[in-house]
Image (cartoon, rainbow, N blue to C red; front, top):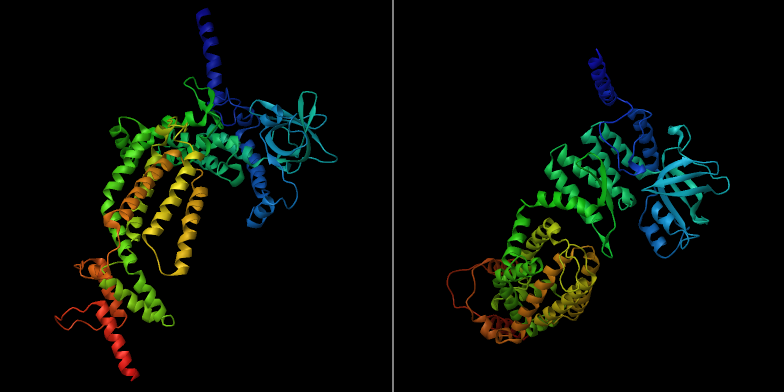
Length: 552
């Protein structure tokens, strides 16, 4: 009997625990919350369904109250117009830097505890005292019974200090859109509604101005983790992790900007940098993709040196497309040779654009040159460039931590490298303009503007791109620039006389067909059998003779 009673005492607590876990809305959850910050801890009471209903109502009203920005508001903010706007600042930053930030208007968010003088906002292990200014009261908490107690709040106010404590003199206390959204995702996880949890986390972490806040990093990471671990959806997980890496894997002076929380083998939670949490998962998901394998091949050919692998990739690709590049340079050279004749045509047909086009295309055909010849290499390179960018993005985890000269991390943007790339673009545009002179003053002015406008545009566009991709394009630009200089200043790059060019054998490809079609559209007669070829200069002399005859 004594043995049975001892056995019963051992089994009964375990049985009660299982019952509590399995009963919907019970007092405990099957998943541990140990190690999570207060922002992510879901209380055991009231029931999950009741909490979910309240949070969804708060979230909906909070999202609706977010100001809709636009072009005019952005311009106003840029020039300091309009009313003063609060700067989002995490609770930790307010608490630690209150003394030097005193008087600043900030907005922060976390979980609220009501006190006699106002309240306290708790977030990520830090807290800030909240004292309402004047008759300010919490608003928008009707679904929670009108009280913000234990609710996710967004507090706007000016930073003050009380001894060593940070104080926010609040001018607004409302529900927090981000924290309510993330807590909804947490409840759905506890209810094991995995698909809904992923949707909620993705939405919470992608909503405009909320997307770059610390808690959004956790939401994005958890969305990817659930997609791969619970839904076995590798494609979705890859896309989520890739987006999370681009946004949250950055560093500031070697220290990670964003952290997240990862479940340990014991079932608890551990706080680590987002880059470290995502890196092994993202690399494994990307390693089977074609772009990843191509970049990895060149890295292996470079003896495992990732920076040298990128440069080698640029060299090999430039060699592969050199025949197209040569055709482009030859076309530019031939166009340069007939510029005086083009200028003469412009003067002669200044008032007849259609006649000028007919004569222009006839001249190009006669001299076996194509004014659009410079576009072909660019058209070929664009899809290759997009594919390589994708491959470098897929290989990004391998580039993380790789250094080269002054560059500390090829997976992160590098301003000095971007400036060098921009300078190379300006030089390239200048050399390209010299190799393709034009008789049209307006076109010359456009070329000069493009020599600076395009590089400047790319400079701003590529500021967030990883250094590995900019390194590839810089190497490619330098090789192309060398090809241009050698061709322009070498024997092959000297302009040919029109007579020599016109005597060459015409190719029977697409370019010739296009020129023939242009000539027929301009009124040329169809072929009537073999006849002695007549050069463009002879045709011009015959046309001038007919005009003089009609004049007499």
